[in-house]
Length: 127
Image (cartoon, rainbow, N blue to C red; front, side, top):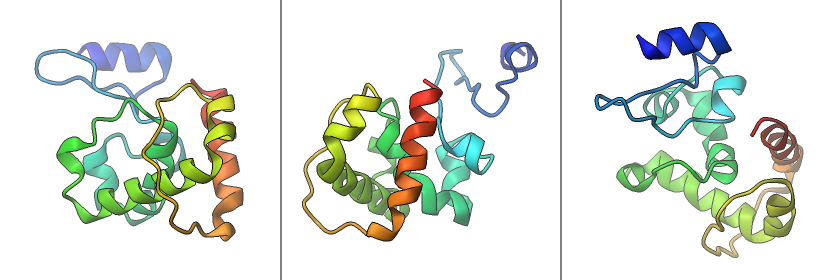
C-alpha cells in the first residue's frame, strides 16, 4: 500500500520496493528506465536486462549481490563491471559516488564504450 501511494505521488512505480518488514530494498537505477524491470529477479529473466546488468552493477553500489553471485548471469555481469571499473574507475568516481569494485585487469569490449558512457551520464543525472 505504501509503495502504491509513493508510486502515484512520485511516479516511481518501477523503483519503489519494500520487503516484508517494510524496509526499503536497494533500488535499481538503470534497468527500470532502460528495460522496465524493477528487481534483480526480473532482470535475470529478461534477456535485454541481462545484457545491461553489468551497467547496473557498475553504477549502483547499493545492490546486495551476495545472494546472487552463484547465478552465472550475475557473476558474469559482476566480473564485467569490475573490468570496466578497473579501466575507468577515475571517470566513474568523478561522475558517481560509489565504493570501488575489485580490480580485474581482464579485457573489455571497446564496442560497448558508447553504452557505458550513456549509462554513466544517465546515472549521474538521476542520483
